[in-house]
Amino acid sequence: KILVPFVGLVLAFCFYSKEDFNPEMLKGKRVIVTGASTGIGEQMAYHLARMGAHVLITARTEAKLQKVVTRCLELGAASAHFMNGSMEDMALAEDVVKEAKHLWGGLDMLILNHIGYTYFNYFDGDVEHIRKLLEINFLSYVAMTVSALPMLKESGGSILVVSSKAGKIGIPFVAPYSATKFALDGFFSSLRQELIIKNISVSITLCILGHIATETAEKTVSHVMQKPGAPKEECALEIIRSGALRKRELYYPYTAVRIPLLIRDWAPEFLDSLTRNSLNVENVKKS
Ligand code: NDP
Image (cartoon, rainbow, N blue to C red):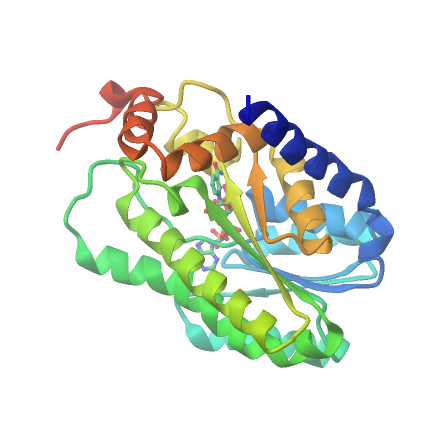
């Protein structure tokens, strides 16, 4: 009896927020998107370009970035630039933000999206791999945020942090990745509180994503998933939309992510078992 009006309220809130969004909100905005040579990041760059934003994109592979920049300009970006290099190098993280200052004199939106390579299997005991992944998936996000905050404070801008269901609940076969995504929640949820206390108008949106059909996900996890991934184009748009609306968190696809999170604190063992049963565990090789 209580659940029905509660679910109704949540859905009404979602649709109300969606109606408030207007692509014009991004016109002329200065946006950094990391990890934008492929997947969701690439699609975010294209959406931003169609909306008339300035984009600065990053990843390691120069040739792919060059193609994305060319496409962004064709789609109507106010300007499009790239910087390539690995985000395990904190100097690069800081240099990207400096480049935005040099190009545009300020910044409106920082979209932190890149991830380093990891395996999808039983934890292999490699501590060094976790250290490296923490540098790429977590510390570089912190370094970029520290460098970008002065410009974002000036513009009343937004930080969008792309995380995962594996950054909120325990999912098998992704222990190193999961650790880095949980770290993002801890750091950015705490920072958001401090910004509010200090009356600083910089929003932080944590994007909790379920399975999305990117090339990487198809290659690494599709054999274990029982359902196909959600479309990366729609996912990318939802991330931008929720950032523009300064939402606290995004859940995409909504029910596949939100329902497990609602169960998490009330029936954790039930959720653990649902999670195990939702995977084709037999397709993961035991080492
Ligand atoms: P992709 O693998 O398609 O994209 C990753 C991007 O990061 C690429 O541009 C890649 O380019 C770049 N990258 C890889 N290694 C480095 C590095 N060392 N330094 C800098 N950049 C690097 O990922 P997705 O689009 O699938 O995922 C995007 C985000 O969404 C991630 O944060 C991921 O955790 C999250 N997510 C995705 C899900 C999914 O099912 N796809 C599910 C849940 C969350 P290059 O190789 O050229 O460096």
